[in-house]
Image (cartoon, rainbow, N blue to C red):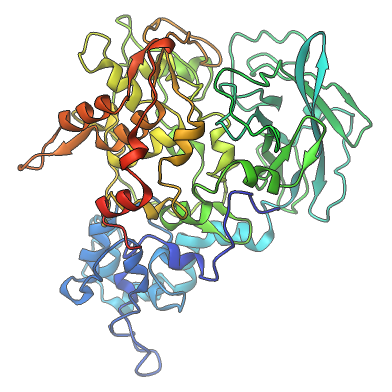
Length: 598
């Protein structure tokens, strides 16, 4: 895979050094070498470098028992607890089963047979739970995927992408191949990849004008074949009944597949791309495929198939064709990287991808969502009153092993922004779920619920989204370090406001919604208001603060200051004003205010 243009030079550190500190199974590594043949290793202090990835001050590990250290982190991690290498050095010591350490995550194991018969010694634990068995239970699926190359059985190779004009409209024309693990074209029974029974999902996301955060909401995606349902599809034409409508194949020679989608908005009132450099667009891929135990491609849902996803990639193009990634970096600075995100969410340095994907967040599915689409990207409520019947349902905790399925969307840089951009207001379902039109905070809550990458990343991690603040709210993000540490996510001084001052695109809002909407997909919005880009970004973190009792309260002072500097929420386009935030809030000033080490 070609490294994402937004990624820095890859670090020489192992992924585990980026991992969440002192998470699952840390205390089990408090072991020394075996003192005699067949004896159980005893405890000693491990290396603590992993702890400082999250903890500002190196924790005193000896102050807690192995069980306590596991229990303190269980359920509060950004990755599955079964990824022991988040904290442990891979020296094998953490694989030795001990009741004290294991009970931190598996708290009720002593109540279940055969452990309930008597109190077992560590030696008895290890006699059943061998080191090989422990590794297989926690890491086996993930390591099998890596060892057998299960995410590399098929790859998407975009060979051309350009803008074509037809009847006074512009369209994106994208051509790709499907390659096997040896880099050879995958033979297809027909000349249409949509007919391949081994393809579960094949989509390409396309959007234009990357410098100014794109011109279109969700761009012009190509749905070759989708695993997303749409019950309104009745099986007419090329789309089977119940599947999201497929994009027609424009032309093919049996190896190269060309799709034409659009119309594409080449320029709008907010476009700011440099005339010298010229605008560019991007293409990213999503492919899920099925195979058998011999790693041969096999029909999906046959009952004997396994599935995995190809690695993500990113291609850059201008109006004439594919261009080097340097064209993109000349227009758009490196803001964050998969390595930065991977500090908490896991990182694959070889392919420059994280271990988080869309469904890691998009997991709340209403009954109506499930019926209509079996996905979270659609609108719809559950009851006759236009509300979800089980809003803010918290997840129950259970320790999780590392999965073997790697996910089809693991590049958290620009591919996410093709949809998560300022042109994409919260859908009717999100507005229905998170906001109340009768509340005096309605507009502010719309902004805090916004899916634009720079807004929702801040609001989610700051805990200011309405779904997080509500009683019984979901997705509380716990930090051991300061939330003001911009450099935990940002590359260089990209946390500064200069870029937004030059090319910041206002957030498009829809202040009305139809609670009965069942739109497929959920693009049911009409833009009738805007929010200033710098104001929305800063407000995402500073909308709320903690009082002397630790209670989350509205930060009226910050809101007033934002308004004083030209920030607007929920106003007509003509009422937007130039923002002056960057005049005082330079990178140096922001670094000082946030306590950043410079």
